[in-house]
Length: 144
Image 1 (cartoon, rainbow, N blue to C red):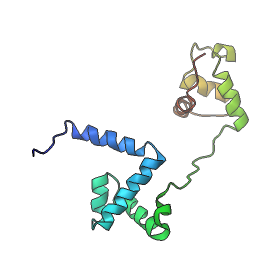
Image 2: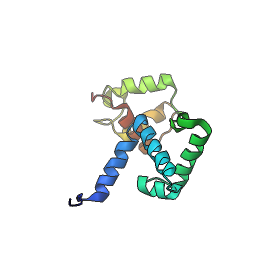
Image 3: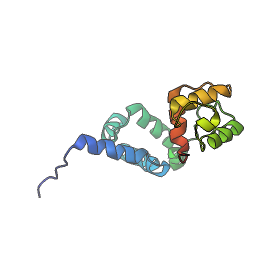
């Protein structure tokens, strides 16, 4: 039997790693595979190389597994940075984004990161265009 050959293996690896990161369930399965490789005798560094992770990350998974069993491999809540927009401001901005910038008193035809940054400044919230671009992407609102 001939060994299989994959065209563009680097791109395939990147695509597969992105798929693993896609959901909480697939990340859990990925951590299970790391523990399985360690249980089969690989070092954390070897398992990390096979899986495309940092050795320190795999070591942390092993430590969590040893302390808490399978429960230790589930996602832990990471709250991240607190939003600069209050829930009320977020609702207001999302409502405004459903109209045109002109209707919001701005001299622009379409909403983009720069226009949103200017609008937020009028509310006393100062976000750079890059942060506004992330908000627009996350909210994915319909165009006015």
